[in-house]
Amino acid sequence: MPKIVTLPGDGIGPEVTAAAVEVLREVAPDLTFEEHAIGGAAYDAHGDPFPQRTRDALEHADAVLLGTVGGAQNSPWNSLPRPMRPESGLLALRKALGCYANLRPVRVQPGLEHLSPLKPELARGVDILIVRELLGGVYFDGDRKIDGDTAYNTMRYTTPEVERVAKMAFWAAEQRKGRVTSVDKANVLEVSELWRRDVQALRDREYRSIHLNHEYVDSVAMLIVSDPSRYDVIVTENLFGDILSDLAAVIPGSLGLMPSASLGDGAGLFEPIHGSAPDIAGKGIANPAAAIMSAAMLLRHGLGRSDAANQIERAVALALREEPTRDLGGQADTKTFTNAVLEAMGTPVG
Image 1 (cartoon, rainbow, N blue to C red):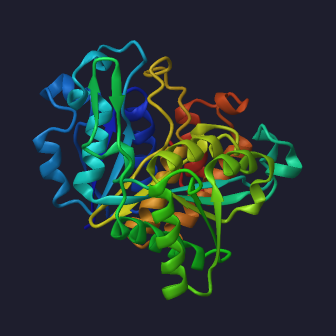
Image 2 (cartoon, rainbow, N blue to C red; image 1 turned 180 degrees about the vertical axis):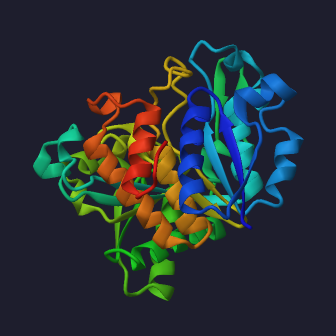
């Protein structure tokens, strides 16, 4: 039986993770689940945002389902030394799993264009997959320091790091429309020159059927909201991908609609991209759609069960139309929306 390690984390993480697990249990009753701590909750319980017992559990996991990590801006966790902060636990988790490619789909469901802040004619038909490099760049490079009134971080990439995430993007494009946009800042950054060179060389060598385009990150930041349908698969480095994927996340209408999958050498990591929303934690009103759709990505990319993933995604789309949550202008709370998803899958609800 496949083993899923769940890491509910902080804030609304436990609530949305519970909703996702409920849906997974219904669509895939053979799965087993084992819960462990991560982030601020792990620090409070064990003095470490990524404790050893959580690390050990990952060794036998087939997939990992994460909730959210972190607290409010004024949280006491933010005054801890950087290695003890919740976000450091998340970075260590990604590294431990070898998850070098983060896949974030940005899709406007038919009939839900009105949820987008964009004009309906711009939002209609948007279907973008952002592939973000996840283990390199300024977030992970050890050449960093604050020295008096001077500070620096270093962005560094090697050809193998660029090629492995580009391969993931080209593979994804083969399943979609066959178009990849590689995003960089090659006009001013040497690391981007290497990025562009290596992505182009890989395409010319192994993926000649893919149409590859190179664009600067500042141009993409404008075009992704003014002409989003121009994009199919976007691949970029860690910092640019972090910013662009959060920008694109508003297109469907809410961060509560944005799932993700982080893939690499071992078990995949699946999580909603929204924050911990401590202001509504424990109130039962969080939107669990992104967590539930992350569970669908777990089935598809982690366990190879595309039919079950499709079933969940169709049910979520129907529930969004019939029982939208409060962040989408509706009245549904977490449980009401989860029940609507279960009903849409044909599951009796008590």
